[in-house]
Length: 150
Image 1 (cartoon, rainbow, N blue to C red):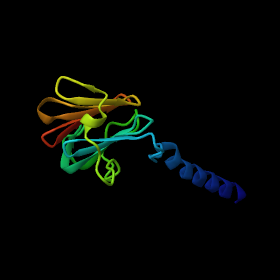
Image 2 (image 1 turned 60 degrees about the horizontal axis):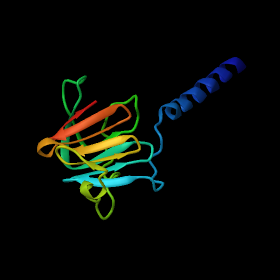
Image 3 (image 1 turned 60 degrees about the vertical axis):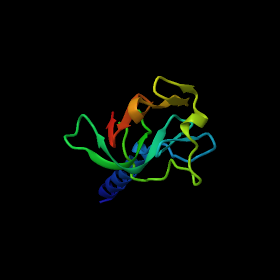
């Protein structure tokens, strides 16, 4: 009996650790986060290179490995092993008074508009109002309410 109790306790302990092992880094703002907007998209880049954006209206996220798009109001890149993905927590990347325009915090100007590079991430305005971000080997871009993510 004692052997079974030890086994059950061991299994429960491992089961309790699994969520911790797969949890991402906390997204607390410790002052090293840059906030900006491009059109109606509000974004932030954290000091660890995590980048996320809130959209004013619902967009559709397309992945090459899914036969259908997913509705989303936000998207993040926060892990190198995970594609850009929605978190369904709209507002995390928007300051209370609104984010400054990308042109006000830009680190450069590209062919189609401003861009910002910070902590290994890059977000930029593109052709005909498109917008994209890349970080941690992942990327996403939006045009006309459709997001292509990888």
